[in-house]
Image (tube, rainbow, N blue to C red):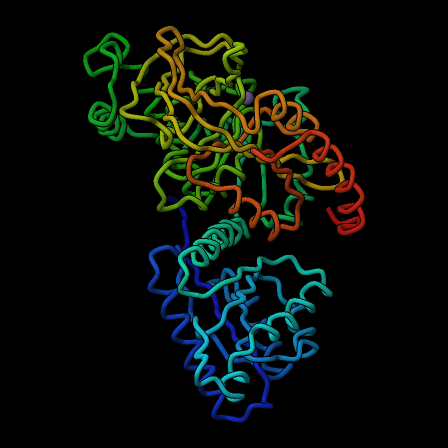
Length: 502
Ligand code: MN
């Protein structure tokens, strides 16, 4: 995956000097054993390193500032093995800019009932030490994830793993660059937004290049590189005969390859992690990029159609979250509905740009006319997305803040669609179609989403907590009455919590 870093997580244990050097040495030894187990766990996508035992305000502040300044530190796991009076943590935690997870665990899984004495009790007192820590986190209004249970418990490790994936995506966003080729589709509202506000809140930058800058890169691609890429296409996909080498429309496949190579070059040189384009601004390009965009998404770039930079950034973040997991993530659009009394379904697609990371089986390379844009017929990958649990996520700008909306869905087997020349997915919404769509619309969710089989609600909620933005979750438990109340409550909460800072 392009520009994917593998940062580390710092494990920090809190204590105090009351216990003397012997118990503190034991705390260090135990912490290292916990970290070794986490580092060895295949469930965790990032390496955990034991950073320090912290027992004074000065030590705590020093490590928090070091975490801020270490580009390779994505976040911290805090654990109070013993009691660590939490006024000591105020200065450090108010300085900390990295995400943290509070692991409420204990070194010993089982109590040694027949031998337990006061020394044991004093060494293993996370039960109240972590409550003291939790109080100051709450008192400071710090967003964090609390995970409870023994560190060897696979369910505990999965909770940590989901947070690590969110943390990795957050780390990826800091200083990330997204490029828009051309501006927003004219008059569309939801794809607009405050790019300054987004950079303040999320840490990524969004800038525009006139499509002419891209055209220059596309025109500079060499014929030999195009020939090699077209040969790859024939190995990877079912290329229709007209587009194959020697076919009467092969030049149009070559132009699509030229687009992919030119766009890839532009993104590479600019160190961009995602992009947008718009069919309303393609001056100098013969085709709207179809397969080119699809393949760049599969390489890990975020994408949003029609200038949708928020969805491009979100798709990139979701791709970072699902790195190494089976199942893929794509840009998606709720396109049209099947409103049968036997079950309501959504057909998701876009004009062209669905990522083949969600393809069930080998994709076909086809060429068909596009009704809009006034350009040559674009080449595209056509495939079905598989059945399975999935979700749609949308990031919208409400003017005074951002909101992340999530709908859990069940993708079903796609019926035969012989006349539909685009990649597509068919799903059923949770809790049911009518509730989900009404909830989505009340929440202001966009028609563009990040659609994923591997990113979970938990990862996205952890991500939103790190970002300090609202999540609206639409799942099997959603009722419209509660959702409408939550939206009203959140209007007040986020207005007070965020104040004037977007
Ligand atoms: Mn669209």
